[in-house]
Amino acid sequence: QVQLVESGGGLVQAGGSLRLSCAASARTFSTYNVAWFRQVPGKEREFVAATYRNGISTFYADFAKGRFTISRDNAKGTVNLQMNSLTPEDTAVYYCARGRTGVGYDVWGQGTQVTVSS
Image (cartoon, rainbow, N blue to C red):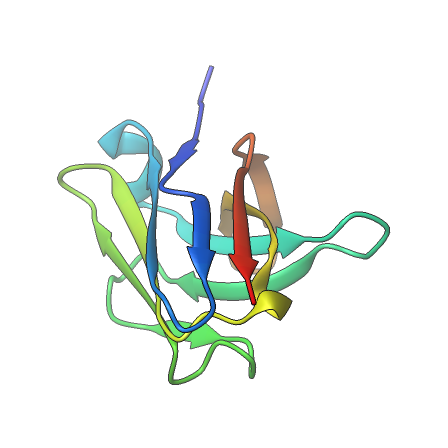
């Protein structure tokens, strides 16, 4: 069974940085788009960033542009999310997910907590 495992979450002060990682078998990632989402209790899960399987195309939510960078290494089976200039509004559980264009995301990780203190 395919599994995605997130890591790198934690507690950071406002203005700080964190690097999240999503790991899976290389075969899992190489032909799929991979995205990061986040969710705050009581709110809808929201899109953060995505990297397409071609390894070139990336997309970001407006709040992530200029602060977050998504990258992938298909050979290693990892997708990273570098988050800079964090604010308390970025506090959430962050999930990575695998999917295909037109189909959606069908495999999700368990999530990693990011907490930004003011």
